[in-house]
Image (cartoon, rainbow, N blue to C red):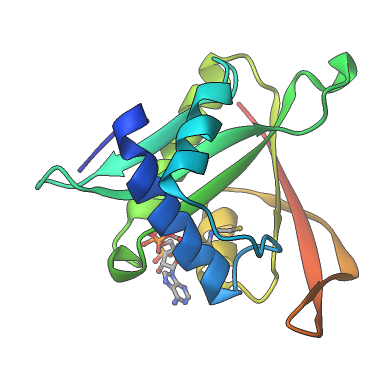
Length: 163
Ligand SMILES: CC(C)(COP(=O)(O)OP(=O)(O)OC[C@H]1O[C@@H](n2cnc3c(N)ncnc32)[C@H](O)[C@@H]1OP(=O)(O)O)[C@@H](O)C(=O)NCCC(=O)NCCS
């Protein structure tokens, strides 16, 4: 498996993997499913400080993606960056999320970021395990922050100061 920068041709697979995460209801408060065209447009809006990476297996298939996302446009926040990671449902639990997070951390460091932050569901066991193993620290919980399918959802905030 290798990690590389996403290309326009990856848009359909990125949309498909993202939609699995949206449909699972275990990863994100996003509820709007994406299309290949929408993700292609999204890729063109990314600047060099907010890259999208993909994990490609030995057969050449994209099996996961991760992105560095703007946390806040105010210049004082320039050294903080948010991120996303989504792995194909059939490929989870094989270290792909781990590899994508390592790559995102390395890229964030190279881009001069000081800190990575994330918002996740505390019930997302694979996500929590991944972030804890990568040294993310607990910041706090927004209780009943979102409403998904008529249920309140808590959102946990974590951070990691980069070395
Ligand atoms: C969360 C996600 C990105 C993790 O990626 P992954 O490739 O499945 O995870 P990895 O194989 O790298 O495993 C990461 C850790 O989670 C653990 N893990 C994997 N599946 C797990 C499960 N079902 N329950 C508990 N822990 C689990 C692994 O054991 C590993 O910990 P370890 O190295 O100490 O053994 C992936 O499951 C995913 O895409 N989920 C849906 C979208 C999502 O939740 N994104 C994150 C939003 S905040």
